Length: 169
Image (cartoon, rainbow, N blue to C red):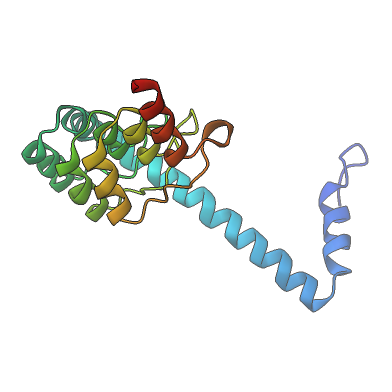
């Protein structure tokens, strides 16, 4: 028996669950299973990042510097091309920002998302267009990047490219 001062949370919850239909039970347990899987995935990502932290940092450095051999070595050692840095930039964002078209294909093949938005609401194609890296833009679009993907304040890479061309005149 429960102590009189103890809240009856468990029994109240049990009564509510007991009153559910079979469909409601199934829905409840499906929702719980999904929540558990999401928590496991987040924990797995956090553990993977902690275990691969040096390789992950070097992957970002190789992406910024345009060093394809170093990039491939980092990926081979377990660095994840999908994981963003503290600013939300993936290695593909860095490669696009610094104009390294040769890195687009290896990063996409390693799982990088061409549509991923950073903390500022920019996808890699936005950054390539903003910094006038036409070859990077072409490579990203060849891998499925959408030139009409809205980013920060609804700006699209196409609109940003036009604005930069006009400003250059």
